[in-house]
Amino acid sequence: MKIPAVTFFATQNRPKTRHPRALLGIMLVECLVYISLFFIILGVAFKLFYSCWANAKGVRRHTDEIVATLKTGERWRQDVRTATAPLRTEDSAEGNVICIPHAGGEIDYRFSEDAIWRRNGRESEWTQVLSKIKSSRMTADQRQRVTAWRWDVELASRRAGARMHPLFSFEAVPQNNQ
Image 1: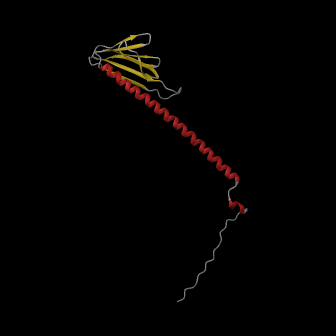
Image 2: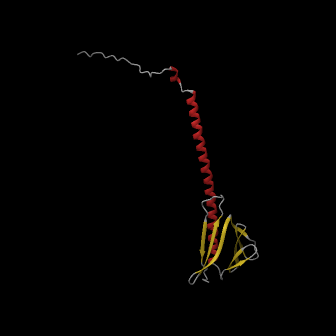
Image 3: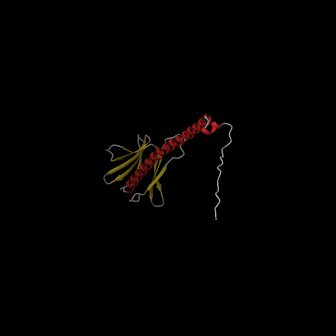
């Protein structure tokens, strides 16, 4: 049996345009529109990138301040816990001073010049342990049979309209249970 030969005729499907030059490239106006859209998107992306970068730096700075505050608070609590006599507060020219008696002398804390200062003994120099403090208050909190000491410290914010004001409260009870 003989198989008939099949011939295919290729048909050309060309788009019908008025100007055959339009197939060769895009028009200059379209190119300018694409370039302007590219630069607008690139500008928005750069603005968002630098905004995120600034916020990340702010978070890192706040984290460092919070860690320093927590370490200082724990040091204060340890000083209060190991007091050998009742704690007392004094008013001085520099500000309110809390005196914590110890076997080797006194440890004093004060808040002045937007910083927390500490000294170990009356003859030693004041050393700054925290800076950029908005407010600080150390008070005795009389409970049923125990006097606890409370320290409230608020960090200063760097921006005028800041939404976050870190406030810390530390409590400690002296071992001698005054």
